[in-house]
Length: 352
Image (cartoon, rainbow, N blue to C red; front, side, top):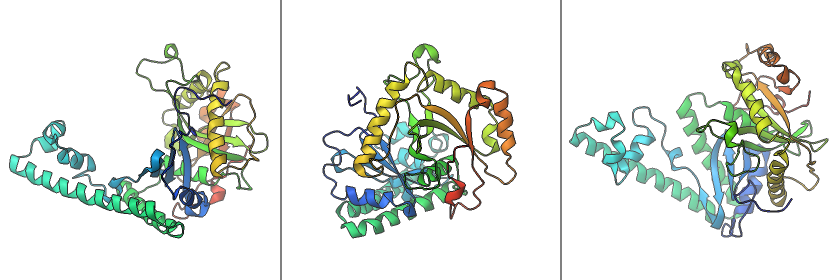
């Protein structure tokens, strides 16, 4: 299982991967510590480091570090970042033509807004470039200080954006964080989140099995059962409101049967998962003790209440409407009451 497909599977690395980033190992070591609340996710020829369910850092080939400059601009309904980028663009008149609020401004007001946008872009890009350059040249002992600072910038942005920064991505983040190899009370090791199937993958849904404009499915969580080495693909549902589209549960299962769970496709999917696992072992985010057996991945659901009055039976009732779903493994997680101080026990994946 070592052949390289025509696209870049998660965990694949070119010869230039991180070649010029001397602090790569220090960044990975900081991110591996669960106390720092960061989660390392491997993509095709780059790494995403997540915080609170959002991308904190992207580490790419040739030493590239990406930290979003948007995090230095508090979200605004009156003057969102999309307006700012359109106004600051060289071809700003074309960019704002589709933005009614901007296209209706007088020429004088438009140019004032444009100058304001240019000033904002220069400021946030300068702040972003400054912190990235500091991280790139930092000594190992100061990497943690700079990453902590970046986390604070991102957390403040996310709280400003939504008021309540907790969403399904945040829940995924902590499920991944608290179900690693060294989590003694967990039955699973989460190895990937938001796994988007490539159109070029041998395990994608065939053209004749989906609508022309329908995208390939995205798997919420991929995990290995510690005891057996069995691979699981898991769909997360957060709160009763996630059940409003009851048909969605059935559609997730059908997508699984047409792709990574199909008898003629799952082995191709497993090849890519081996790339992923081997990359994690190379960085030490997984040890060589972790095994993955060559069997068809199993499908399962995770349900986590969002509010105290969310009921597990509401989820069970939806599954019972579909005989094929009623026997599928479902992990029911307890309510997390305070995401300012998330509790590992309310996110542990225990096999029923």
